[in-house]
Length: 420
Image: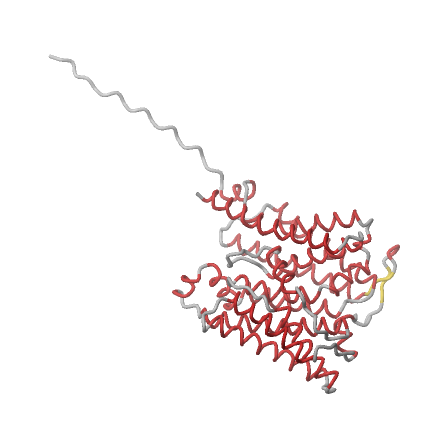
């Protein structure tokens, strides 16, 4: 009888290596999304340090920091509206011309016709809203690409500026408007001594402390909420670093401003706009719809998002913010001129892209656009302090913009590769 044979058992496959916990992977592995979100702030810090060293510390002097904020406030205001337009997947090339037209309109009202500023300013904002509605209609309801509509608007509203001004400058503006653009808050509580640093405005210091407290509270609340949902969070060391570093930078700037004079009025206006629009984009339904439209238009439409309405109001909003910037710019120069706002649209677009907006839409933050605008302002100011020519400034700004967009594309590819 033949001996029975049994098949040899198949070799066992090696046991898979244990995976690192999700929290550990998020803390220690490459995170392209995190790098994309925080890279702009690291770049900003490095640029400030670079120019501070090259200028021998002149960049960080109290008066110079105040000048950077006041001189570029209108670009930062435009950047707030532009980032929303870009997140939704559009572009606005007309904001410089709209700024000029609305500034000219306000000058005619207040200077030529003695209309009180409290009436003239709302009328100017209304004009900006109507211009935005005009462009928003063609984009949202008629279906013409925003690039074409706003390119036409850039020409039309520049021509309108020349007509309103009769091709000549109009000024001077009332004292209230000039103070709004160039002035500082009164020292209501007086100054406090800071030792070798001298005196500093108490109100400005208190505002800085309040901002630091709000940063700490907001970050801690967000971390706690993510933990309750079982989501991974940064280690406590990284979390504290993310709180302490910006708080120290903020307090340094606040102390320098308090040492020079009090808070610039335009900084209070800009701060209010940043808070309002940050809340809209982060918490309001309208803000979520903006991201949905830019991220996936078809999915947003199928989800019930009123795409045409959202797009229309985005352009209305851009027109109003351009009018605000027009009043600030004209008040700062104390003159509404035919060439006001030339190339401002390029600075606003650059601020948005440098600040982290994606070319395809769907990505971006208001604070990122402000940071991008400040990077451009620091480059302008720093190279001016170094005596660089305008061609050198344009060269550096162009390279920075190219680097920012290249970084955005690279991080997207890296994130896509890591997810496969």
